[in-house]
Amino acid sequence: MASITKEVEKELIPFVRLYKDGSVERLGNSPYVPPSPQDTETGVSSKDITISQDPSISARLYLPKLNQPHHQKLPILIYFHGGGFCIESAFSSDHQRYLNSLVSQAQVVAVSVEYRLAPEHLLPIAYEDSWAALQWVASHFIDDNVVIKEPWLINHGDFNRVFLGGDSAGANIVHNIALRAGVEGLHGGVRITGAFLTHPFFWGLKPVGSEYTAEREKGLAYSIWNLVYPSAPGGIDNPMINPFSPGAPSLAGLGCSRLLVTVSEKDRLRDRGIMYYNAAKESEWKGEVELIEVEGEGHAFQILDCGTENANNLIKRLASFLLK
Image (cartoon, rainbow, N blue to C red):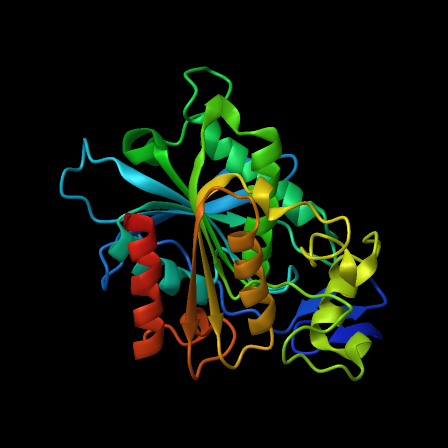
């Protein structure tokens, strides 16, 4: 029988390939791996849970090895993976290894959110899924019968120490839902203690810093945004991708009290991250903001090259932020 070759409608290398029959091939995904009852290297346990059936939102939960299994309360980290809103997963091997290391060192309960991906689910769906996941975590603080409670959060989560974290597109999500939390608040009056943004995915039409000026509309950042949010009002200057565009909400409205921004020397998104740090520092936001710059590394190296000296050092710094 002759094989049938599907026609390609659009491709964005090295992310996704879209076919005319509506199917999507993800080119840049790392392999999915199952959760672990206890990771052999770190002692961290993980499991997968369903946050919502409709819409479909799930997560991988992480719990470090405990000294006092029945009484120990730990900070809660709600984490959002990167991948340009169109690849990667909370269930990928790269993120599993990274979060095992971070959870072990920071001694936190982590909720790694599996938000729905573009192009099947165009933005702003990922933002809505992430917001729903954050509110689901916060709902555990309320003593009611509306939500089926997750034992790891109930038994070990300290709702006075709630953190957000993410890399790349996940860091973009952190920014956007931290702003939303500042406006709308969370269930039970839960407050976000801090948030880290690692190599945040921000862009805009006008170049900043060392960004190149030629053919910006053919660049990868522009192409990703056009793929995942083609109807975005303002296009690449939509406030969700460009926090510095005219009409973007002030960073003074961030709904957290501490902020950590991480950039890398060889990352083309570096200057936007530094700009974000300076904008937060110079705004009327009352929180504390810190910047980490890593020399000689590229985008998301702490995940892609997890286990190297620089990756280990950055994870240590992130853990320290969560331990304060």
